Image (cartoon, rainbow over all chains, first blue to last red; front, side, top):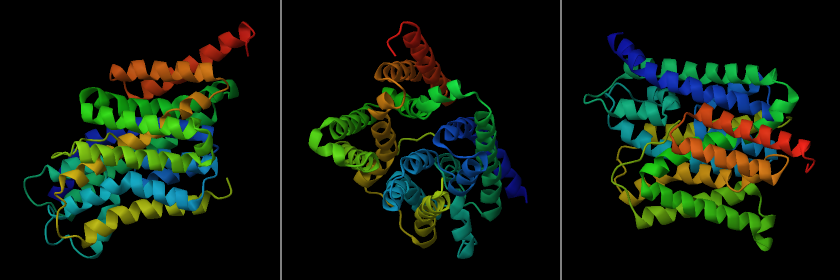
Length: 235
Length: 106
């Protein structure tokens, strides 16, 4: 119980950050033809920023299920790495079914907090740590979506760029600080432009083009400048 | 959106399995710096490739899309919050299209 309370306390700053990002996500989903409960359910079940942004894009574009699965796999692959890492830092009691349940809450920020503990953490702490961020993420989405659904039409048409504005806000600050990230982002954008504007490549669906561009850029970056420490991704 | 449930199932299912399978089954830690770098870069490259050039085609005109993009970049460079950057891009688009209507180029 004591550990649960510690976890809840550690989750407060994460929850606040999530609520504001999720609010924007919720606001944007309206532009993609989703109702407020559909948006909220996505946030509750997926609990991931970049993956959800890509997901609603695929939904709106009527992309194939394979495209959806591959894009989610690629974007969220890092959670697998975090899961492996976190598995070293939990008590022996966290085993079997507990792990299958607790895996749900692995996100960039939750992982960062959980892995920073110098002692092995248990179920109580992890559950406590998850509670507020999950609520912040889900309720923030609901709030944004409900507000979005009452906005007048001429304003909502300008919301078409809101999602991209968010992406820019996620990518630009770390790219400004870190030249490696700047380089991989540049490569990704360059490839994405080639896919869009080269006559022969135009026929490839936008979702597939994004996956190919992103994987090549990250792969080239990883080979050229491998990283000892992970850069944080803001959710 | 008639495919909502099946899309949601794939989206949530894949995301959950990526988290659950390694956390539940793996015993060894990944230390390969190339692999770690790849996984660290992927979120940025995905978002970047999704944004550009798609942002230019997200509005009624290339010009308003470009204005939204540049405004977003300028504010993001100053480390403004996601909400601020997103709203600024939208306002940029809205105002640009309004002006274009007035001067009759749209």
